[in-house]
Amino acid sequence: MIKHPLQNSWTLWEHLNVRTKSWEENLVEIFSIETVEDFWTMVNHITPASKLKIGTGYLLFKKGIPPMWEHPANKNGGRWFVSFEKKKRRLELLTIAGLK
Image 1: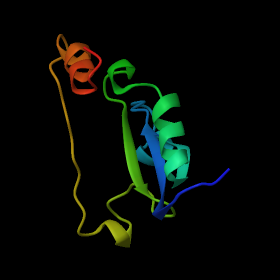
Image 2 (image 1 turned 120 degrees about the horizontal axis):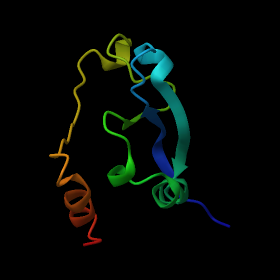
Image 3 (image 1 turned 180 degrees about the vertical axis):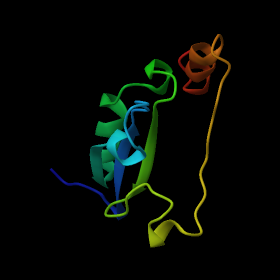
Image 4 (image 1 turned 180 degrees about the horizontal axis):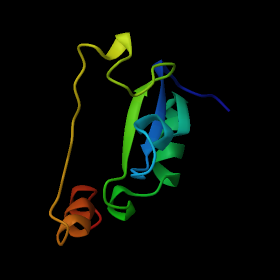
């Protein structure tokens, strides 16, 4: 099977938001992406954002760079953050995904 490599490899992390743990302890490395096929495998198998617990989120970073502000590669970085009203969150995420 022919695979289509990406220019960079990426790692998907999940932040669990367990209040008794530190930021680092809440990070779980979920999946590494090196090809277009890896990307679609990830998209089709991760828990949809609409089903994540409140305060939990995904982080996508270049492979080898941890999702922390303190890392030199992130010093000029930023983030995209989407937040929805609790009552409307599931419907809005499904609408964005084209499933509603």
